[in-house]
Image (cartoon, rainbow, N blue to C red; front, side):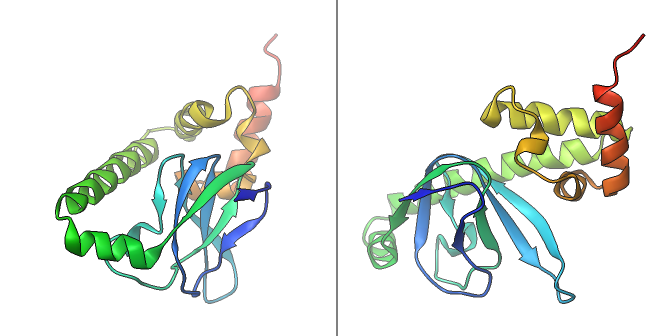
Length: 169
């Protein structure tokens, strides 16, 4: 299945199947009680989501939205869970998938521990270049979302991005 930028794969609170992201990037957004969306995760190619349902089914804890055109393959939940029971080696495969996700989250934590806001933004931009090439990060994320990922206010992100685009004399 193909998703265009901005299309929703699934919504927070719904229940459904698992998905394998073959190409593209997805963002996972949680809607707070006040109705304000908060970006909590970025899904990269070869991930199977939702990760919290890899061992047992659970409702989606966020909304998955395509950041760029994506190719997504539905994974049969009944087949997935049946194979877990029949093939213990599959549990090791899941553990490796989760380990990779934890390592990626550690990189995100490293971005948050940078001393200056500019360093936080540069690290995030460098990470995104792996997936979006030379395109600016603002092609796929809003300034608010960038701030949510690196713990900065939107206004600070705006100021940093403007400073980057201002030529040095």
